[in-house]
Image 1 (cartoon, rainbow, N blue to C red):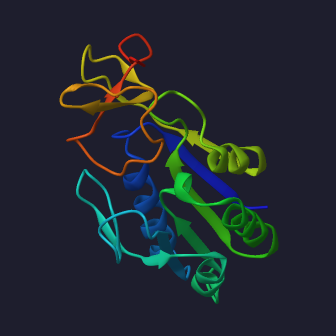
Image 2 (cartoon, rainbow, N blue to C red; image 1 turned 90 degrees about the vertical axis):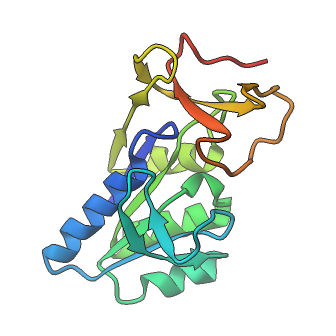
Image 3 (cartoon, rainbow, N blue to C red; image 1 turned 90 degrees about the horizontal axis):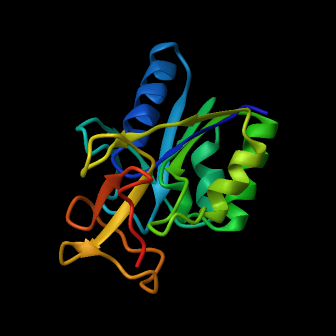
Length: 180
């Protein structure tokens, strides 16, 4: 199995690292393709907050993943925390049967609870890269994504999935991360 997983909190460079690996594979002559779930914005691109972009397909379901992978030697998928169990199974099967699969996604939600899809991929991955950001409060290594509503930590009862960027989230270390 050739399944690589890149995880960490928001603003840790997961998408940048995914794009870097895909560009390196393409430079080495590999046939590379990329995709991400439909729920994520900026359709048609893997977009890093640090700037790099790479064309990407929208992955609505397992069929879309299978179509994406046809003829590819390297398949990159971003935001895997948004994928359902059948899609995660499909990625693992792809990695087991053919192409190298590089998946990137948040390991923990804003409450610090593991995303089941990422947890499942981690159990099957041949390599895991866990990145950290810089805590917006103290500058320490950030391992958590702090959700903010009106500048304050969000209540733990808000929905698990709320797509947003710097207006809704900031990187925090374990000490500075707050759950209300």
